[in-house]
Amino acid sequence: MAGNTLSQLGRYRILGELGHGAMGIVYKAEDPLLGRVVAIKTVTLVTDEAERIEYEARFFQEARAAGGLNHPSLITIHDIGREGDIAYMAMELIEGVELREVMTRGPVPLRLALDIIAQAAEGLAFAHDRGVVHRDIKPGNIMVVRGRHAKIMDFGIARMRVSDVKTQTGAIMGSPKYMSPEQVAGRRVDHRADIFSLGVVLYELAAGSPPFTAPNMAQLMQQIAVATPLPPSAVNPSLPAMLDLIAARALEKEPDARYQSAAEMAADLRGCIAELPEMQDKPPSASGPADRLDFEIEATVDVPQAAERTIPRDPAAALTAMNVAAGFSTVTGLHLALSRRFDSNDALRHLTALAGGGSSPQQTPPRPAVLARLWRDPDRNAFLAATLTAAAGAIVIAFL
Image 1 (spheres, rainbow, N blue to C red):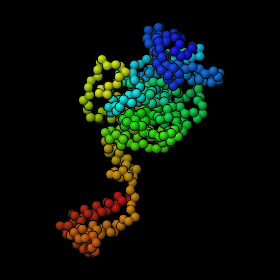
Image 2 (cartoon, rainbow, N blue to C red; image 1 turned 120 degrees about the horizontal axis):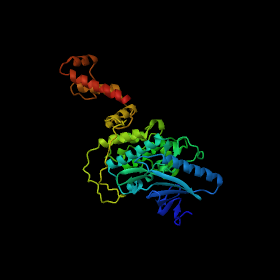
Image 3 (cartoon, helix red, strand yellow; image 1 turned 90 degrees about the vertical axis):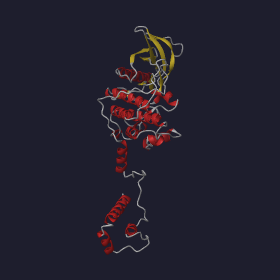
Image 4 (tube, rainbow, N blue to C red; image 1 turned 180 degrees about the vertical axis):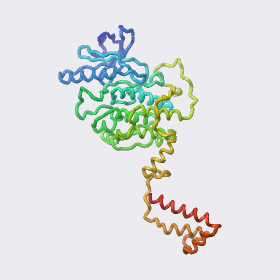
C-alpha cells in the first residue's frame, strides 16, 4: 500500500515521507539489519501487464547501473527490491539542500559555484567511465551538503549506453530547460548530453540567468537547437574570460565539438578556480545546520594533479585569436564590410597632402616627382614611411 499509511517496505521500517521524486514517493526509512537510516525511492508499478514488465525491467536496470557507482559526488545505492505493486531503491540519506534552492537565495560566490560544478563534473566522469548516462542533469538533481559538497542524485532516468530495455522511439527524456540539442531533436544520446546540461547549470549559476529562455516550449527547444547564448561575462561582467571559454565549449551544439569527457571540463574548472583572486572569506561554522549554505564560506578546492586543463592560460588572447579566426574585429567584435564610398586613391591623396606640409585635403596632391623628393628628404623620410605604411594597413584591414 502506497501513501502515508505505508509502514514497511521489505525489511525497511518507514519513518516518514521525504517528498515526491521523478518516478514516485521518496521515504525516510530505517534499516534494522545494518542499523542505519536510508532514503527509499519507490515506483508504483502500472497495471497494464506489458507496460508493467517494461517499467519494472527499466527500474531494476537503472538501480543496478546506479548501484555500481561509488564516488563522493554520487548518491550511493544500497539495495533494491519489490513489495507487491511497489518497486523500491534504498539509497544513502543525505542532509543537504538542492542546488535549485541555493540559486533562489541569491548570487553564489564564484569560487564556490565553480567548485560545486567541478565536483559534479568529476562525479559524472566516474559514471560515464562505467557506461552510465544520467540524462537529467539540472539544479534539482544536484544536492549541496554541508554548504560545499556536491552530490548528484536521482539517476531515475539513467541508462546504460547499450540498453536491454528500449525506450519509446522519439521519447524525450530530461528537463526541457537543461536538455541538450540532441535530446531536443530526438537523436541518439550519449554521455556528452550530460556535459551540455551541466554547462547550462554552470552558466546559470555563474551568470545569474539561464543561457536559453523563451515564453513557450517550442521556442525554448528552438533556442537550444540553434541559438548561441551570450558569453557569461556579457551577462555578469565580473566573470573571467576563461569561464566564457569553458561555457562555450560545454554548450557546443554538436557533441563532437564539446568536451569529450566530463573530466576535461572538471580540469578546466579547477584551473579557472586556481587563477581567481584570493578571497578573504570567513571560515565555516561548525555549529551551523548541515543543510544551510553560507554564502560567506569559501569552498575548499583540491585541484587534481593528474588532470590536464584544455583551456589556455591566457583566455583573453585565446578569445582574440578565436575572433580573428572567425573574421571578427578584436575591437568592436563585429565583422565590418568595406564601405562603397571608400576611395583608396582619395585616402592616399589626403595622407600625402598632410605629409607635404599640412596642406588642405582638398589641394592637388604632389606629383610623383615631388613624392620622390619627399622620400629622399631625410627630415621627412621616417614620417612619410610610417604614414604610408599605416594607410596600406588600414586598406588591408578594411577589405578583411
